[in-house]
Length: 125
Image (tube, rainbow, N blue to C red; front, side, top):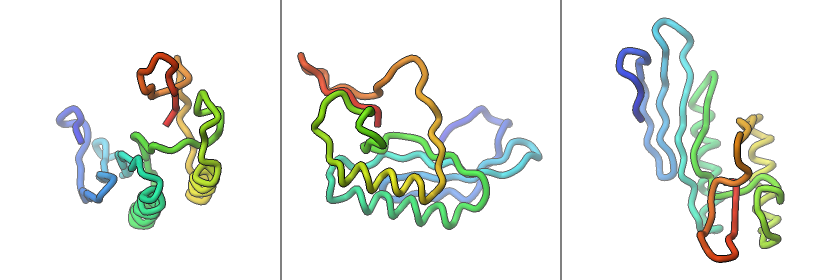
């Protein structure tokens, strides 16, 4: 984690398998949590990833920002083809709803990843 020196104070760093979390405070403002993630590509590990984040949330009281690459999609519109694991999509959607997370909209483009092939797969993950 990095930020401009003197703007935030940090405490309670937490490093897990798929995430890094830290509590931040700007000057004498309220404390809040930031968690950066990199989710696994393998479907058999995605439930462990979501469980890790669920456990982190329990320990991070107050405002929480969660950002990074989840390697999962929330809706079929997040991918440019129909090769979609709908069961995994549903689990991810339920997880987001259970934790009452809100998405920060992507502005200026529709997708965040491409496999760089002649006929590419494009995904917002």
